[in-house]
Image 1 (tube, rainbow, N blue to C red):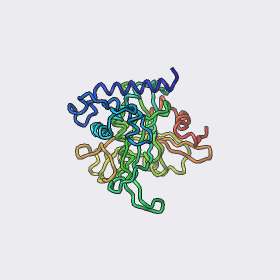
Image 2: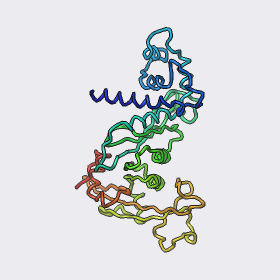
Image 3: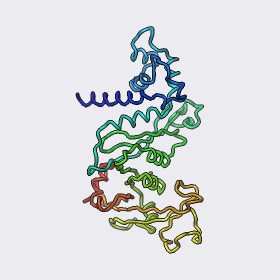
Image 4: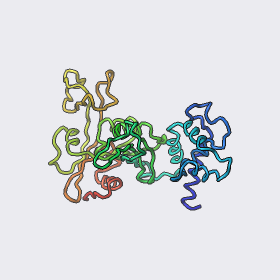
Length: 329
Protein backbone atom coordinates (compact mmCIF):
# COMPACT_ATOMS: atom_id res chain seq x y z
CA UNK A 1 0.00 0.00 0.00
CA UNK A 2 1.45 3.36 -1.01
CA UNK A 3 1.48 6.39 1.27
CA UNK A 4 -1.64 8.09 -0.11
CA UNK A 5 -3.64 4.86 0.14
CA UNK A 6 -2.52 4.34 3.74
CA UNK A 7 -3.55 7.89 4.69
CA UNK A 8 -6.92 7.38 3.03
CA UNK A 9 -7.40 4.14 4.95
CA UNK A 10 -6.59 5.92 8.22
CA UNK A 11 -9.08 8.68 7.43
CA UNK A 12 -11.83 6.19 6.59
CA UNK A 13 -11.09 4.31 9.80
CA UNK A 14 -11.39 7.54 11.78
CA UNK A 15 -14.76 8.31 10.15
CA UNK A 16 -15.91 4.77 10.94
CA UNK A 17 -14.94 5.27 14.59
CA UNK A 18 -16.98 8.47 14.88
CA UNK A 19 -19.95 6.94 13.06
CA UNK A 20 -20.26 4.25 15.73
CA UNK A 21 -21.45 6.90 18.21
CA UNK A 22 -23.03 9.69 16.10
CA UNK A 23 -25.05 10.87 19.10
CA UNK A 24 -21.83 12.37 20.52
CA UNK A 25 -21.70 14.79 17.60
CA UNK A 26 -25.41 15.42 17.12
CA UNK A 27 -27.15 18.68 17.97
CA UNK A 28 -29.98 16.63 19.49
CA UNK A 29 -28.58 13.37 20.88
CA UNK A 30 -31.13 10.59 20.89
CA UNK A 31 -33.14 12.33 18.16
CA UNK A 32 -30.73 13.05 15.32
CA UNK A 33 -29.21 10.19 13.30
CA UNK A 34 -31.33 7.48 14.93
CA UNK A 35 -32.99 6.50 11.63
CA UNK A 36 -31.29 4.62 8.83
CA UNK A 37 -31.19 7.22 6.04
CA UNK A 38 -29.30 7.14 2.77
CA UNK A 39 -27.40 10.27 3.77
CA UNK A 40 -26.48 9.27 7.28
CA UNK A 41 -23.77 10.59 9.57
CA UNK A 42 -20.94 8.53 8.03
CA UNK A 43 -21.78 9.35 4.41
CA UNK A 44 -22.33 13.01 5.20
CA UNK A 45 -18.87 13.35 6.82
CA UNK A 46 -17.18 11.58 3.91
CA UNK A 47 -19.12 13.47 1.27
CA UNK A 48 -18.40 16.82 2.92
CA UNK A 49 -14.65 16.11 2.86
CA UNK A 50 -14.69 15.07 -0.81
CA UNK A 51 -16.86 17.89 -2.16
CA UNK A 52 -15.44 19.96 -5.00
CA UNK A 53 -16.72 23.27 -6.40
CA UNK A 54 -20.03 22.22 -7.93
CA UNK A 55 -23.51 23.00 -6.68
CA UNK A 56 -24.95 20.75 -3.96
CA UNK A 57 -27.10 18.81 -6.44
CA UNK A 58 -24.08 17.90 -8.59
CA UNK A 59 -22.06 17.00 -5.50
CA UNK A 60 -24.82 14.62 -4.41
CA UNK A 61 -24.89 13.03 -7.87
CA UNK A 62 -21.10 12.61 -7.82
CA UNK A 63 -21.17 10.88 -4.45
CA UNK A 64 -24.32 8.73 -4.79
CA UNK A 65 -24.54 8.43 -8.56
CA UNK A 66 -26.94 10.12 -10.96
CA UNK A 67 -30.01 8.18 -9.90
CA UNK A 68 -33.56 9.17 -9.01
CA UNK A 69 -33.13 7.95 -5.42
CA UNK A 70 -30.07 10.16 -4.70
CA UNK A 71 -30.65 12.36 -1.61
CA UNK A 72 -32.07 15.80 -2.30
CA UNK A 73 -30.53 19.18 -1.52
CA UNK A 74 -33.10 19.59 1.23
CA UNK A 75 -31.95 16.32 2.79
CA UNK A 76 -28.34 17.50 2.66
CA UNK A 77 -29.19 20.75 4.48
CA UNK A 78 -31.30 18.93 7.07
CA UNK A 79 -28.49 16.55 7.88
CA UNK A 80 -26.00 19.41 8.10
CA UNK A 81 -28.09 21.12 10.77
CA UNK A 82 -27.98 17.97 12.89
CA UNK A 83 -24.18 17.89 13.19
CA UNK A 84 -22.42 19.87 15.90
CA UNK A 85 -19.64 22.23 14.89
CA UNK A 86 -17.02 20.25 16.79
CA UNK A 87 -17.68 17.04 14.83
CA UNK A 88 -14.97 17.80 12.27
CA UNK A 89 -12.49 18.78 14.97
CA UNK A 90 -13.12 15.43 16.61
CA UNK A 91 -12.53 13.77 13.26
CA UNK A 92 -9.18 15.57 12.98
CA UNK A 93 -8.22 14.38 16.47
CA UNK A 94 -9.34 10.81 15.75
CA UNK A 95 -7.36 10.85 12.49
CA UNK A 96 -4.20 12.15 14.20
CA UNK A 97 -4.39 9.52 16.94
CA UNK A 98 -3.99 6.82 14.29
CA UNK A 99 -0.90 8.39 12.72
CA UNK A 100 2.60 7.33 13.79
CA UNK A 101 4.37 10.03 15.80
CA UNK A 102 7.85 11.42 15.30
CA UNK A 103 9.39 12.44 18.61
CA UNK A 104 12.40 14.62 19.44
CA UNK A 105 14.79 12.68 21.67
CA UNK A 106 12.13 9.97 21.82
CA UNK A 107 9.94 12.17 24.04
CA UNK A 108 8.80 15.53 22.65
CA UNK A 109 6.33 16.61 19.99
CA UNK A 110 6.72 20.08 18.47
CA UNK A 111 3.52 22.05 17.82
CA UNK A 112 3.70 25.51 16.25
CA UNK A 113 0.80 27.93 16.64
CA UNK A 114 -0.03 30.65 14.13
CA UNK A 115 -3.02 32.43 12.65
CA UNK A 116 -4.16 33.65 9.24
CA UNK A 117 -7.21 35.50 7.90
CA UNK A 118 -9.36 34.10 5.12
CA UNK A 119 -12.15 35.68 3.05
CA UNK A 120 -15.51 33.90 2.98
CA UNK A 121 -18.79 34.41 1.11
CA UNK A 122 -20.27 37.91 1.16
CA UNK A 123 -22.86 38.52 3.87
CA UNK A 124 -23.23 42.15 5.02
CA UNK A 125 -25.65 41.01 7.75
CA UNK A 126 -22.93 39.11 9.60
CA UNK A 127 -21.45 41.98 11.60
CA UNK A 128 -18.76 39.80 13.22
CA UNK A 129 -17.13 38.99 9.88
CA UNK A 130 -18.21 41.80 7.53
CA UNK A 131 -15.92 44.72 6.63
CA UNK A 132 -17.24 47.84 4.91
CA UNK A 133 -16.18 48.74 1.35
CA UNK A 134 -12.73 50.30 1.10
CA UNK A 135 -10.09 51.06 -1.51
CA UNK A 136 -9.48 47.38 -2.14
CA UNK A 137 -13.08 46.16 -2.08
CA UNK A 138 -16.00 48.10 -3.53
CA UNK A 139 -18.64 45.75 -2.09
CA UNK A 140 -17.05 45.00 1.25
CA UNK A 141 -16.05 41.51 2.32
CA UNK A 142 -16.45 38.91 5.06
CA UNK A 143 -13.50 37.33 6.77
CA UNK A 144 -12.67 34.70 9.37
CA UNK A 145 -9.43 34.17 11.30
CA UNK A 146 -8.03 30.65 11.36
CA UNK A 147 -5.83 29.71 14.32
CA UNK A 148 -3.95 26.46 13.87
CA UNK A 149 -1.57 24.13 15.65
CA UNK A 150 0.88 22.38 13.34
CA UNK A 151 3.21 19.49 14.17
CA UNK A 152 6.67 20.48 12.95
CA UNK A 153 7.96 16.91 13.01
CA UNK A 154 4.91 15.10 11.61
CA UNK A 155 4.00 17.89 9.13
CA UNK A 156 0.31 17.80 9.98
CA UNK A 157 -2.25 20.02 11.69
CA UNK A 158 -3.12 18.98 15.23
CA UNK A 159 -5.89 21.50 15.97
CA UNK A 160 -7.78 24.41 14.40
CA UNK A 161 -9.90 27.15 15.96
CA UNK A 162 -11.87 29.56 13.74
CA UNK A 163 -12.85 33.03 14.94
CA UNK A 164 -14.88 35.82 13.28
CA UNK A 165 -12.31 38.27 11.95
CA UNK A 166 -13.72 41.19 13.93
CA UNK A 167 -13.39 39.15 17.10
CA UNK A 168 -10.00 37.62 16.38
CA UNK A 169 -7.91 37.04 19.47
CA UNK A 170 -4.84 34.91 18.98
CA UNK A 171 -4.03 34.99 22.71
CA UNK A 172 -7.35 33.41 23.69
CA UNK A 173 -7.18 31.00 20.73
CA UNK A 174 -3.75 29.78 21.84
CA UNK A 175 -4.93 29.23 25.41
CA UNK A 176 -8.08 27.44 24.26
CA UNK A 177 -6.14 25.08 21.98
CA UNK A 178 -3.57 24.37 24.68
CA UNK A 179 -6.29 23.61 27.25
CA UNK A 180 -8.12 21.24 24.90
CA UNK A 181 -5.01 19.72 23.32
CA UNK A 182 -5.34 15.98 22.70
CA UNK A 183 -2.06 14.86 24.28
CA UNK A 184 -1.50 11.24 25.40
CA UNK A 185 -0.86 10.80 29.11
CA UNK A 186 2.88 10.15 28.87
CA UNK A 187 3.64 12.47 25.94
CA UNK A 188 5.14 15.93 26.08
CA UNK A 189 4.54 18.77 23.65
CA UNK A 190 6.64 21.88 23.12
CA UNK A 191 4.41 24.73 21.91
CA UNK A 192 6.24 27.08 19.55
CA UNK A 193 4.98 30.63 19.12
CA UNK A 194 6.10 33.80 17.37
CA UNK A 195 6.42 37.20 19.07
CA UNK A 196 2.67 37.79 18.91
CA UNK A 197 2.16 34.97 21.41
CA UNK A 198 4.41 36.40 24.13
CA UNK A 199 2.12 36.52 27.16
CA UNK A 200 2.39 35.44 30.78
CA UNK A 201 -1.11 34.03 30.42
CA UNK A 202 -0.03 31.88 27.47
CA UNK A 203 2.99 30.65 29.42
CA UNK A 204 0.78 29.80 32.41
CA UNK A 205 -1.73 27.82 30.34
CA UNK A 206 1.06 25.64 28.94
CA UNK A 207 2.56 25.13 32.41
CA UNK A 208 -0.81 24.23 33.94
CA UNK A 209 -1.27 21.71 31.12
CA UNK A 210 2.01 20.12 32.18
CA UNK A 211 3.71 20.92 28.87
CA UNK A 212 6.45 23.17 27.49
CA UNK A 213 6.68 26.33 25.40
CA UNK A 214 9.27 28.04 23.22
CA UNK A 215 8.16 31.54 22.23
CA UNK A 216 10.06 34.38 20.62
CA UNK A 217 9.79 37.80 22.25
CA UNK A 218 10.95 41.29 21.39
CA UNK A 219 13.41 43.32 23.48
CA UNK A 220 10.64 45.26 25.26
CA UNK A 221 8.90 42.11 26.48
CA UNK A 222 12.20 40.45 27.38
CA UNK A 223 13.28 43.54 29.32
CA UNK A 224 10.02 43.41 31.27
CA UNK A 225 10.71 39.82 32.23
CA UNK A 226 14.28 40.55 33.31
CA UNK A 227 13.39 43.78 35.10
CA UNK A 228 15.98 45.88 33.23
CA UNK A 229 16.86 46.71 29.59
CA UNK A 230 18.44 43.86 27.67
CA UNK A 231 18.74 45.45 24.20
CA UNK A 232 22.49 46.13 24.65
CA UNK A 233 23.36 42.81 26.29
CA UNK A 234 25.19 39.96 24.54
CA UNK A 235 23.91 36.39 24.46
CA UNK A 236 22.71 34.95 27.76
CA UNK A 237 20.69 32.10 29.28
CA UNK A 238 18.93 33.12 32.50
CA UNK A 239 16.37 31.54 34.82
CA UNK A 240 13.77 34.03 36.07
CA UNK A 241 11.34 33.61 38.97
CA UNK A 242 8.40 36.01 38.81
CA UNK A 243 5.37 36.73 40.96
CA UNK A 244 2.43 38.01 38.92
CA UNK A 245 -0.19 40.24 40.53
CA UNK A 246 -2.87 42.77 39.64
CA UNK A 247 -2.06 44.95 42.63
CA UNK A 248 0.39 47.86 42.66
CA UNK A 249 0.18 48.20 46.44
CA UNK A 250 3.34 46.78 48.00
CA UNK A 251 1.43 46.47 51.27
CA UNK A 252 -0.65 43.72 49.65
CA UNK A 253 2.36 41.70 48.53
CA UNK A 254 2.64 38.43 50.46
CA UNK A 255 6.43 38.41 49.97
CA UNK A 256 7.57 42.04 49.97
CA UNK A 257 11.17 40.91 50.41
CA UNK A 258 10.93 39.65 46.81
CA UNK A 259 9.77 43.02 45.51
CA UNK A 260 11.98 42.86 42.39
CA UNK A 261 10.30 39.60 41.35
CA UNK A 262 6.79 41.10 41.21
CA UNK A 263 5.28 41.97 37.84
CA UNK A 264 2.08 44.00 37.63
CA UNK A 265 -0.59 42.65 35.28
CA UNK A 266 -2.96 45.32 33.98
CA UNK A 267 -6.64 44.84 34.78
CA UNK A 268 -7.56 44.54 31.10
CA UNK A 269 -4.72 42.09 30.35
CA UNK A 270 -5.77 38.41 30.37
CA UNK A 271 -4.36 36.36 33.23
CA UNK A 272 -6.72 33.49 33.90
CA UNK A 273 -4.98 32.29 37.06
CA UNK A 274 -5.37 35.54 39.02
CA UNK A 275 -8.66 36.25 40.81
CA UNK A 276 -10.04 37.46 44.14
CA UNK A 277 -9.02 34.20 45.81
CA UNK A 278 -5.65 33.89 44.10
CA UNK A 279 -3.98 37.29 44.03
CA UNK A 280 -0.49 36.09 43.12
CA UNK A 281 0.80 33.58 40.60
CA UNK A 282 4.35 32.23 40.65
CA UNK A 283 5.91 31.83 37.23
CA UNK A 284 9.40 30.47 36.59
CA UNK A 285 10.78 30.76 33.09
CA UNK A 286 14.01 30.63 31.16
CA UNK A 287 15.01 33.52 28.93
CA UNK A 288 17.67 33.08 26.25
CA UNK A 289 19.23 35.72 24.02
CA UNK A 290 20.94 34.30 20.95
CA UNK A 291 22.90 35.97 18.19
CA UNK A 292 21.87 35.69 14.54
CA UNK A 293 24.29 35.40 11.63
CA UNK A 294 23.71 39.06 10.75
CA UNK A 295 24.83 40.16 14.21
CA UNK A 296 21.36 40.91 15.59
CA UNK A 297 19.86 39.12 18.57
CA UNK A 298 16.74 37.03 19.14
CA UNK A 299 15.06 36.46 22.51
CA UNK A 300 13.41 33.17 23.40
CA UNK A 301 11.20 32.54 26.44
CA UNK A 302 10.82 28.90 27.45
CA UNK A 303 10.35 26.52 30.36
CA UNK A 304 12.45 23.73 28.86
CA UNK A 305 14.75 22.18 31.48
CA UNK A 306 18.42 23.05 31.18
CA UNK A 307 19.52 19.51 31.99
CA UNK A 308 17.89 18.32 28.74
CA UNK A 309 18.19 21.45 26.59
CA UNK A 310 21.49 23.27 26.73
CA UNK A 311 21.81 26.79 25.32
CA UNK A 312 23.52 25.45 22.19
CA UNK A 313 20.56 23.11 21.53
CA UNK A 314 18.30 26.07 20.79
CA UNK A 315 19.98 26.62 17.44
CA UNK A 316 18.44 23.41 16.10
CA UNK A 317 15.10 24.09 17.82
CA UNK A 318 14.97 27.59 16.37
CA UNK A 319 15.65 26.33 12.85
CA UNK A 320 12.72 23.91 13.03
CA UNK A 321 10.26 26.79 13.37
CA UNK A 322 12.07 29.73 11.78
CA UNK A 323 14.44 28.21 9.20
CA UNK A 324 14.99 31.40 7.20
CA UNK A 325 16.62 33.21 10.13
CA UNK A 326 19.80 31.26 10.93
CA UNK A 327 21.51 31.58 14.31
CA UNK A 328 25.26 31.84 14.43
CA UNK A 329 27.12 29.08 16.19
